[in-house]
Amino acid sequence: MYNLFRWKNDDGSSTRKKNALKRLKNSLNGSEMTKRFSGYLQNDAHEFMNICLDQMKEEVQEALGEKSEDIAAKVCPVVRNFEGSLRKYIKCKGCKDVVTKDELFNHLSLNIPHNQSRSPTKVQLTRLLGRFFQAEELERSCEKCKCATAVQYLKIRTLPRVIILHLLRSEFDQYRGTQEKNSHRIQVDRFLEIGSFCSSDISGPPPFVPKKTSHV
Ligand SMILES: [Zn+2]
Image 1: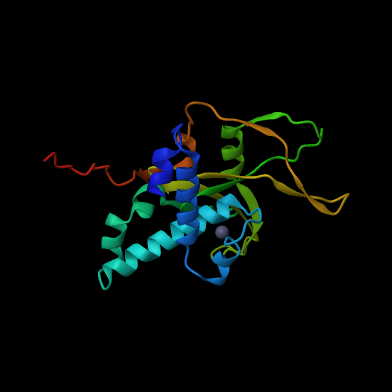
Image 2: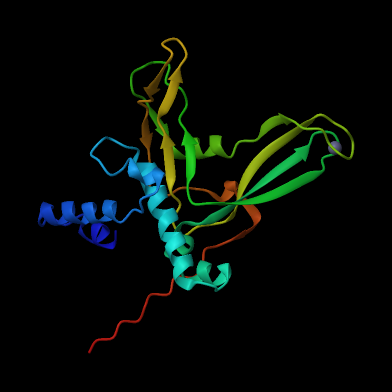
């Protein structure tokens, strides 16, 4: 994987890139989940990436053996670079009591609004993020006041160093009864303003400390 990133924008030999990609595919363990990537059928790139990240995380944990998960988190490149946490808030509409729950994430899957015109139009990435973090009403009986409705919303509690954003382009066409690809073009601004999606006690990723190399 390291070599693939290194050679990504390299104009050099394409055979070198092909071989690196083959080696990456072959390094996946032989579980049922990874077997379908062994052939040459078209597969979901995001799923492939998730399997690679999960496997890397497991291998770091195994290599550390009995050591605690805290130590693994400090040295694991997957955790250090891609893992953050989301805080889910459930606020009772009656007594305003708030219940929270933190969950780890290594990507955010963003729904793209249904394209009614059928011709590709442009949607801003910040709008998709806004929809992801938008509050929604849900039915939930409050233990304190017995109110039956609550509002649920998410905030980023811990920022990863790199946020992976997954665009969900597949949508169900209720008239045709088939899965269709959403053709909206996504406008990615140079800077993403995410302050309003973060909790007030937000914390950042672990500091980046480049390895000292010896020049002998
Ligand atoms: Zn309540």
